[in-house]
Length: 300
Image (tube, rainbow, N blue to C red; front, side, top):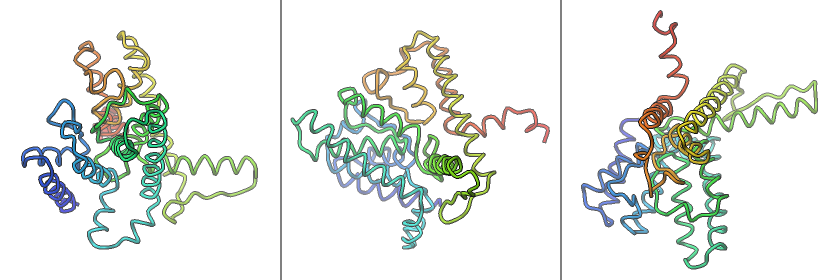
């Protein structure tokens, strides 16, 4: 896995260097892409370069960073069947492609001043950036229709795939919980039916599914409590929701009032300390944080 990580980083560095970036810029942005950090050297982020080539290169490597690194290992060894058969990867890819096309259509019909390619590139870049929880930006999302902003928030919550450095709930958890909900609905219709849940052709036991459900419940509780706490600090509700989602998902860049045009420096000291805590929770994941602070952990 270390070799795969290094290979991907070196490949992106080389390709960015062949574009409009110097070597220092290429190295920094490659580190920030593969680690899904999303930190740029410039205030305007990736829009600073105004290069289609650079944006498409970063899109591709953000996509790789948001997919399970084990799949990249399979790709290096030309085991493409294992990649195609992976359900999480297929769902992750389908959502990105379908939503990129939907975003392009909506943006184009709302404003025809730019080419379809331009809107497609902006859409694909934003979707891959937020679904992989990298956080790079190449456009002003405040000018987008509200429905697209809502979709971006969902991408932040769902997050990247398992086995990555990305944050969020992770695609596999959302997928399995959706399968569980479907199975429960079938049981309500057919009370005597036994509906097993499969993932990658393997039947899942109840312990795994209940673990995923518990994690999502803990995530929702953390989200709700955090929104209430930040709202008490003279932050409007919409901004509080945006800040909590961005922090728990480790996005970095916001998409609303605290996006590229502003920052958290305007908030109170308590708010910034609390946001820092949320970012830590999002990175190490809630279960591990609960485990660390539990007395049983230290006793053992």
